[in-house]
Length: 126
Image (tube, rainbow, N blue to C red; front, side):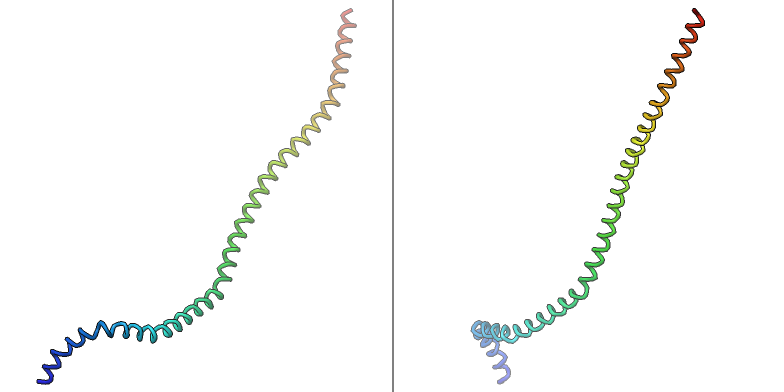
């Protein structure tokens, strides 16, 4: 009989007292859980920071290595393009100079030979 009375009265009492006890329960849980959460959070942050300190330099070195390779390739390509243009210009300049010298040497000789041939032809015809 006491048991059935408790079974009926207890839910009613809980229903009445729960709104009053809820803030107290929440506050108690927050007071107990907050330090535990903060401690676990600090531990997690420490672990992640340590992991970051160990892996970050390797990652940075790896990225710098790949960037360095790309930079070297670009420099080589640019140098090859510049060299090709410069070589072509140097060859043209050298060829032009050589051709000018050859023409300057040959033209007077050709002109002289043609003039002599024309004089010989004219004197032979006269």
